[in-house]
Image (tube, rainbow, N blue to C red; front, side, top):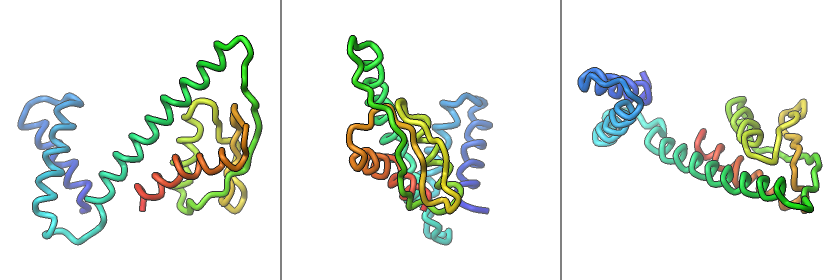
Length: 157
């Protein structure tokens, strides 16, 4: 059994002991379980779990920041008298290899306002993205790779 499953079991045990199955209680149980497992991490074979969780949190925070910033930009453009949108389709070369990484990157692109994942090349090395603001192709490619793909690769590695 991997450490994540043990952590989920500890969160469930916390919910049972507290007789509270709310999301808040389970999150508290998960965090307490993580802390307890971190204390005894020497008993488990190293699988990167204690590095992965902070990276997943970092990826989530980066995505939330991008979500807010892009929402503001799209809202400002929609409400403007003279919209500045320059839509276009770009090809973004990917470093992601596994299906989970590809799915996560394409999903985050689609969830970000102003961008939409259209297709993945047959060799899974290029993601085609429709973007609402294509002012500079290279800058947009770099932004997608740095702010969405890189944190996903770090979190899932």
